[in-house]
Length: 82
Image 1: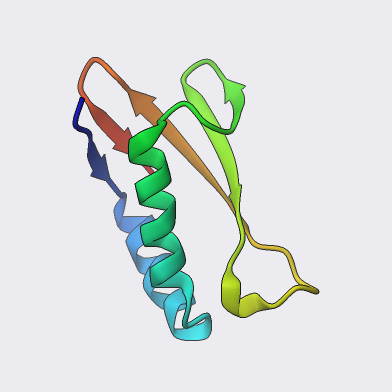
Image 2: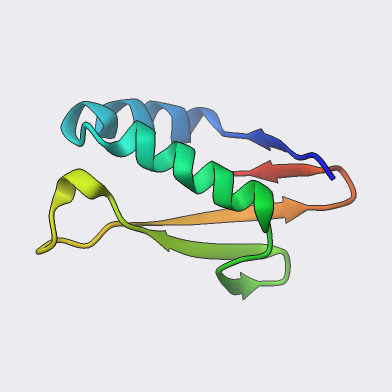
């Protein structure tokens, strides 16, 4: 089954700003999208229909943590909203 991944305007603005600070973020995000397309139900369920996954940001280094992404997989519409 193919999925359409949609991001919100707020996410896009924050992602662009963080991409300037953490150069590996776009590549890490592409890896996350690949994993999400393979298994949209990975991660911890926060509430019915809302899931959260922790993703490391390579350029942050080992002493700092990564980021958490909350998403809503909607199988009926084949969309994933971030």
